[in-house]
Length: 435
Image (cartoon, rainbow, N blue to C red; front, side, top):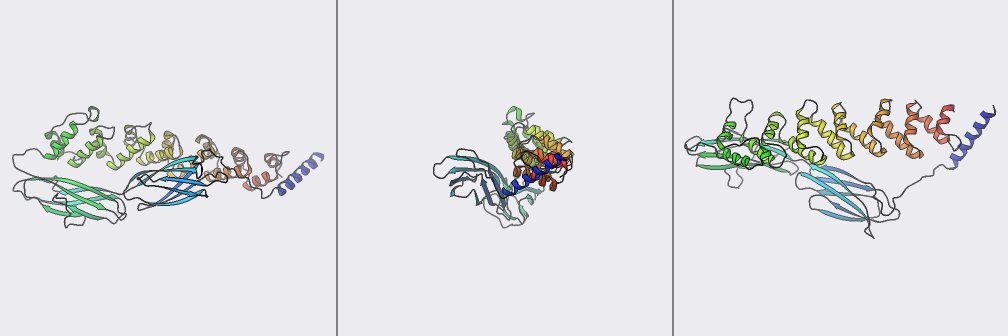
């Protein structure tokens, strides 16, 4: 009985103490010279980007915020606030690196620098023709019917054609056009596609009208010459004009290798660490140049994984391109382990779930396996985030709250116990007493 009375007195004293402290808020300020966390959020539509930038406060300071938009445009703003909103217009599609630097407005002391990647995607254009290739002997009917296929960007599209290769727009303005070539020569038919955002992309195709004695297509010779210029490790063999034309004219093959594909493979082999033959195989077996260029960009971001490594992952039966893309996003945004993120994506975790998971691990400064333990005990990511916020509010370690929650304690009970706790009696002890 005496022990019970003693506990009740302690609890009553704790409740009186908490009541007297109600409404007290503790705020921490970064000191001058610290490197505060800078957060950059971007909302983009048709190249119009709204940037929301915020940073940790430095007590009683004015700030100078320098912004490099990554397209050779910069701005600098002075403010007393710890957040600003900027609007910027990008003229062309592409990959941009945004850089923000926050300084003391008076002393120029740098408080922190942060970067963010921004990808603006425009249309991808492929030009087709009938006949293909458009190669004629003098005296033939030299009519070519062109058709353009557009992927990506923002519909609707507008089209500008230069069919005779003179550099001037022709009358055709739809996604198809026809032209008759009769004079001996090599022409370049080109179409430029503009989407609703104003982003443009062009595609071209050579058209040849040759004398009968000209046995090899000039484009085949151009490709052969290009491949010969590649470093030894960027090709598996030597090719002459006839070799290239034979590959092109392979009517019995499962996939016809057009001049456009072979030339594009040569251009990519000149910049990507794969052989010309590997790039052609990728295009025939997978989803085209766009994903290959993405993988090359991912390899640059990851640094420890080559383009060949990533191509091997996608071409295996274990991972998809979406798995790789999701893992790269987690590795670059939240410093997650790429292999760990890839395995989770392959097991069915969607991009949103992985983002929440790795962001929470980064915020709590713990390894992902620590969160796995609590998730396996039945907690959810929203609960773990709530746990972290609650622990921060009560100024205790978040695992203390998480352990109580996994012991089936309700949030109401946990909240009440921490409000009643004092130096003599912890929240865990109050919960164990069932008060």
